[in-house]
Amino acid sequence: MTMTVEKTAAGGAGREAIEALVASGGLDGLFEQIGSGQVSLTGSDGLLPALLKEALERGLQAELTDHLGYEKGEPAPVARGNARNGISTKVIDSQVGSFEIEVPRDRAGTFTPRLVRKGQRRMDGLDTMIISLYAGGMTVREIRHHLESTLGVELSAGTISTITDAVCDAVMEWQQRPLDEFYPIIYLDAIRVKIRDQGRVSNRAAHIAVGVDMDGVKHVLGIWIQSEEGASFWAHVCAELANRGVRDVLFVCCDGLAGLAEAVEATWPDSMVQTCVVHLIRSSMRFVAYQDRKKVAAALKPVYTAVNEDAALDALAEFAAGWADKYPDALSTWQRAWERFTPFLAFPPMLRRVLYTTNAIESLNYQLRKVIKNRGHFPSDAAAVKLLWLAICNIEDRRAAERATTPTSKHSRRATNRLVEGRLTTNWKQALAQLAAAYPERITPYL
Image (cartoon, helix red, strand yellow):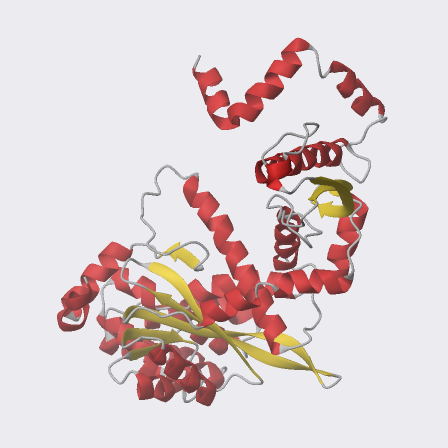
């Protein structure tokens, strides 16, 4: 009994109608034709396009009946001064294939169909499918071939580009949306994209900022394209975030780029810039021979796991005694970044886990690189931002679906759909409590 109730709830009235047809045997002949290959499901001659055609044409006739006030086949009321006036045909592309429909007309030309709008040549679901394929990393040519080979739908490259360009207004609105006044943590990082400019392809940096709000939810705050990743452009990014409403940031976690700390502090003077420990480890390992990497990593671990700065200095001195002669660059990497590395050593373990690395944004960047690696290059900066935004939306859609099917996920999201949210920061409640204890005057007003 329970299984039947769940099945009915999941399928709804449509499922009940199909089950009734199956039970009556009304679909047996059709299934035999499908099984023998006489009837296909999709494509221009398929079953699903034929059913969709029939449903749309009946719906259009019902709309015209409502507009004119009399049924098809009945005499037209003379007093109304309007009547049916034949049909016009047009081809509709859909996610199940292309098909031709008959659109009824009225004599006065006042009928405006809503089911299939005037000038509409594609079902809305097809546009959504194309945008989804584009967000997944497929090029315009690949999408065109995919639609033609699987659905029998032939669309030009220009049409597909126009469909994907329809999201540009949404991208602009998202990029300019107001932000929260206060973010406890903001992560800054950049990935490389190839842009074609005046017939020449060059590498550019896509700057991405991720902010953790007071609920511990990570939000992508914006995407900015620039020829090189530099402190001066990061200063521009911080200024734009401030113009969009960010008044204060407690911590800014970044990769240790020269001058970046000063650029951040020029916008938010009270913020603390934390160099990503994972980036420091990678930089110090750059010149270490493969056979020594495990030993060097083990020797560095006491430095970034020290209980305080004094203990970290002792651990660094011990590392220098053992490895400085063989790998001086590994030691100098930590010495140069020491001032920006040590802030998090003053905090308890839960807060350290949140601050010590930019993995929150590295994880996002990893997924974005998978999307853009097949593209080769982009025709413009705007095209790159468009794809990155769609990819981020796609990533969040998958995460939202996972949250919806996780019984233990009870966190309430405040943002509206497609505001591009990230995951909830691990152990955020404990970290927030420690932040509130350390900075009560800055945290308490936003609790």
